[in-house]
Image 1 (cartoon, rainbow, N blue to C red):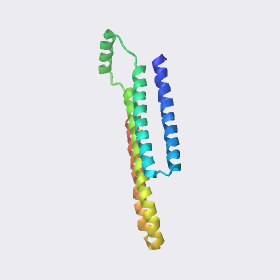
Image 2 (image 1 turned 90 degrees about the vertical axis):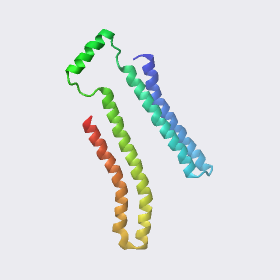
Image 3 (image 1 turned 180 degrees about the horizontal axis):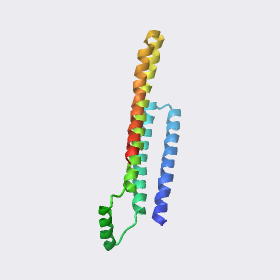
Image 4 (image 1 turned 120 degrees about the vertical axis):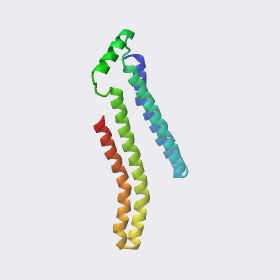
Amino acid sequence: MNTMNVFLTAALIILPALALMFSAFYTFKKRMEGKPARKVMRVNLVTFLILIVMVSICAFAVSAANEPVAAPEATAQAAEAEEAAAAPASSSDKGLGLLAAGLVTAISGIGGGIAVAAGAPAAIAATSEDPKSFGKSLIFVALGESIALYGVVISILILNKV
């Protein structure tokens, strides 16, 4: 492993951990100062998005650094061999498939959490006012949870494709 790979791997591990610790510390500090939760969550969301971009860039850089560089004459022979044989998907294709499956699961889980966070208190309030509305309220909460399940199903389909 050369020095660049070691640096990129260390950055892939250390930078996200530092960003998460900073985000947690900032959240705790601002909530203790009496800042509204909405403003604090904006900072957490921006930190999370920056973290996703940093990890993706570092992962692609490590992947690119690990691919061997072939000589020009060997490249022509390798291209002919690849065209002749129906080779399975490359490691970068598999990595992108795994990344896509993870993103699908994460985003659908976040969406399902937001839906349940909005629907469950309303369902509880409706049930406390009229106990007969429990069944109808439960359906709306289940619809929010189904968003996350759809994401899991799609990610399983992606994993089976890769």
